[in-house]
Image 1 (cartoon, helix red, strand yellow):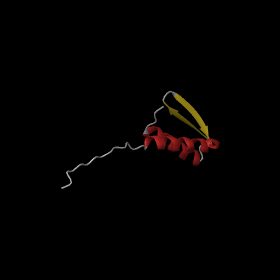
Image 2 (cartoon, helix red, strand yellow):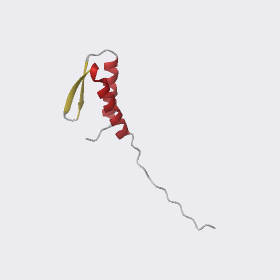
Image 3 (tube, one colour):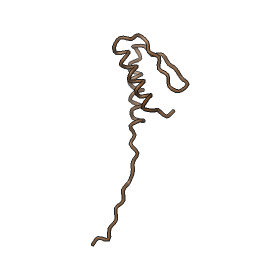
Image 4 (cartoon, rainbow, N blue to C red):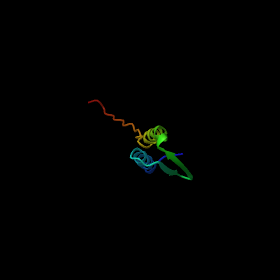
Length: 70
């Protein structure tokens, strides 16, 4: 599954809600919906890191420069 910036925002909002005292949070991505509780914070943190790594991948490009050497 390809993650988007919206998925990253949703996971971050779920983490904030759980850290601020909400007992359960429902997170939906694509056709899946999972409910997390405050004991699942390490799982959500790992998911956030995985999504952030995928979303922030910068495409690499190579620049060639040539000259006659004069």
